Image (cartoon, rainbow, N blue to C red):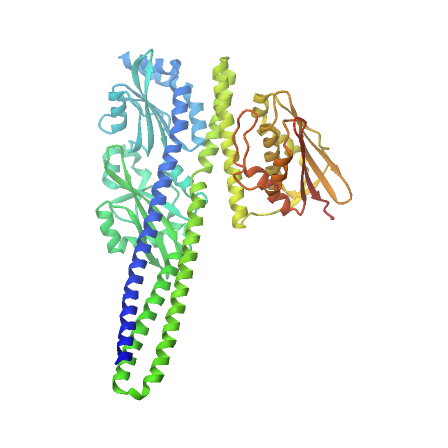
Length: 605
């Protein structure tokens, strides 16, 4: 009787454990999909917020100048259509070259409006102007009414886009507004950087037909997803793009027949959902696009193959079925015990074996869960620092700060304005340098960085690095000297060598003072070609010099002008010289300066 009660107890425990495993899996499954959906929302918000800064900067420094706003002032006053058209042409001549530069940085539209909401100049459709936008463009109407800037998604009479709309004034009098528009394709391009997720974009058919000029309807085609939605023809035709082993067209066709997703689309809801196509699991992210008036107008749709979801599901299924089998065996053994006491010893041994098997399966489950949590944590930390959408916006900011710097240098003699432009350029360059170091560091941690050594002449590369850092050197009045022989050759990876020199020279600039100089020169012996980076800056104490041998990321010291750093520079230099089987040496004295040697083995051809 005691044995029978013991078996019933084990069966009860296994039943409860099966229920707990099911609940844990359901919660993990739901949270995993929620995290994927949250990454899409966060990525979209980061991209649109990042572009707010350069858009406002362009409006305040160039588009709101008196020679431009005066034309809108005159256009508001005139009743003469010939004079109105002449003002339109003058504004086009002043802004067309600037618009061409904007297009290279992924901006789609530049559009000026008068204060009564009439279109004054569409740089993307110069021949269409003078039409009243009051019933079609709520953002324009709101800005001209409140005289405050707004931004958000909106379908226009020609293109859709994420719009940044600002009021314009001439002599403190409101004369109209200007918008800078970012295409959805630009947002998709940035979100797909360093990501295996591909995106499509669809708009509600009614929204398109109610807004567009009739001769612009060719900009859209019917979506495979749902007949109520249209695809933008200016976005790459993603139907043939491969995601894993299937095309987006195949996956979208499956979505259109999925009752759950059809119900989600009909309610204009969002979220992440698994779909099976060709025996593979894909996660579909439906991100609802809400316009300026808070109405649903379309979807940004993400497609990604997800083996992890399949592995997790089959792991759960295996354990769950194993528990059910063990429960069945327990019931069978209990019945055998009731019918035959002679078999009690054999059944007891069998139960013990089954218990050992349960313990082994549970230990396997714990190890799998631990590995999954650790992998997810590392993945989350990595993408929280380097997400899909940082590299292109930072590059755009660097390019735009260069444009602003050149424009201010040529057009203004105001020392404060020149200093402002210089600091913007220095700040964006430092941000780009930090991002590149973070990317290099993450690749070294994941062991995915590529090492492609070849013969190269470092003289020209040193000049390129000096040119990149010239604004910082000029600002601190530090002389950069390239004393390398133009003919010397190294056997090294070009990208790693450029990164090492950039980090070392940047470090020397950080710890040098006004009037100092930084020199790059070489030496060689039978085994090595040595590249030296030497400065006569503030130097390094013996205590800190000793700690540099164990330098770790995020160990950093402020510079002579309180410059901040990440501590990644020297860490990466030591990692990269290790790839070359070379040596890293550092010598320094307080107030005398610092000399760092990179020793590259001589390659025998």
